[in-house]
Image (cartoon, rainbow, N blue to C red; front, top):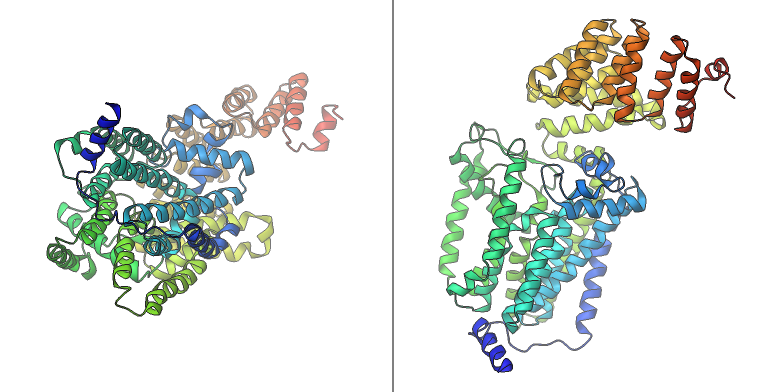
Length: 614
């Protein structure tokens, strides 16, 4: 009975023979040769990225300044969103890197590199599954996936770990579902769901997987009965849940309101996104980490004419409505773009190269199958020449483009080269250059670095006078250069634009302090603390004012103690020691200095002698 029931179940799932179930098995070992070749080409193309570093595009939030990685804080990892996303599995993987190499980027880059190689192999096997074991189709599709220049962003950008990680589980889930369709084993469906959960925990973009499963149903030849949809209810429920969580997290900051871009313009954006990603599959230019939205009052001809492409595409798909390959490939492409069509405008870029990572599988599969079908009618050498040309051209572009991600200067300089009238890349580059100027290794170049950074900020503010980041970066540079009057003006402008941001008050408080206006400086540090109660730096700054300018040593000790209770920095103990000394409490002064020394804080020999410390 059990065997008969199982057989009946198999027939229910696969009631119609699959169009790809023909026996076309490769010679044993031949597949391994293709995989090794594929891995070799992909590994060479991405090899330069292993010598890259962090960038100031989210890497500080994901890694260098992310306290969740220290320890690590497992409770925080699984309960707190990071940079507008809930992706605990990704943060956990970064915590593993932190345990291995701290803030040395080498292990982070290596993990991204290896995950991309794994994904490339998974694409090969996934296409082997759905193509009826056509090795040439699997190789061609995986080659496009592995070395396409638009995929560099997903791999070479450390913060985009979520992309390469979620894709591992996404592809594994698709393979398990295909196996379920072939065998009818419910266990495969359960494994598919479990892998779906892992994919969601790596990146919420995995919410579209249930639609991809329906596309596989169509490709396999399965009838769309009620049961086909019922078995996917758990998948859709989980997708809706993660979708709600993501929108709730992102809506305050990342999602633009209708007052910025009205609904009609967003429909044009959706058409443009579908068109531009399609064309850049073939012509990957320009390559940039930042492709800005057009001006709200001038969308530009490419955006305005993009609906014509959609009309032509729909006409083509209608003409090819009996061609399952074309319909499945385009369905896979568009399904995996649904979340980034900018109907809901997210972020600062209209298109992002990382969003092609999974969608291009569908289009590459169409091309691979077409080449396979036409191989008999073409010269065999010509059929081999196309993948060779792609490997050389795309491979060379990718190899070169990975170096653009070397650091923030190379990254944003490349963006500025393509989009010189976009303000955000300039403020990001200015931020990096000003930090370089503070590095003793660049002491001789500091003046020119500051000058270039200020120029970037000036251009950014000319392009967008209400750009808060422009006043923020330039004001901080002016503080570094002791140009306090100019810093004060920029801090005022920054506060007007972002009154809820503590940094503006901190900047202004520092400028007031240097200009000897201690009362106003105290008021600004008070505001910092009201906005961020655990702002230990502002407590320390307030204490310094009490100690140095008002000689209120008891109040200073209270403020230093608050700073220490939040963050026990060595120099906070040293500062408090000075206040204890002024009050004549030598024992406590000596005790704080000893703690400061244990924490590696440098203490002047004269002060140690005064306290009779060795």
